[in-house]
Length: 166
Image (cartoon, rainbow, N blue to C red):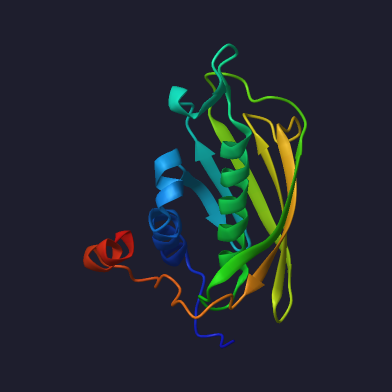
C-alpha cells in the first residue's frame, strides 16, 4: 500500500457521503454517518416502523442492528487504511444485550484497532444515547483487497455515483 492518501477533514467529509451512499442496503435502512475520524465511525439509523421486527412491541429487527454495525465497522476500516482498497467482512460476531427502545434512533460506533497486511480488526457498539449502556456489541475481521472490484473513489461525482447505483 502506498501512503499517497491523506486523511484530512475534507476527505473525511467526502467519505462520509460516499461510503454509505454506494451501498443500496445501507441507503434503504436510512444509515447515515454521524461522525468519523481516523479508524473510527459513528453511524445512525432513525427509528422507522418499516424496520420493526415485532409489531406488538415496536422493537427494531436485530438484522438492522447487525447491518448498522457491519457498515460502521467497514467505514472504520476504510478510515484506518492509508489508501482506498476493497474490503469484505470475514467475521462479525454480535452480542445482543437488550432490545432497542421503540421510537429511538440507533447509534453505532466502530473502532478499527489493528490493521495487518491482509486483515483489519474492529470492535463496535450499538446504543441509543449512552455507549456505556449498549444494545449490542460486536467484534469483526475484514479482509483487505478482498476482490478485484475497484474501491469507491474518494472524488466521486454524481455521474460516477449513478454508475454504482446500477
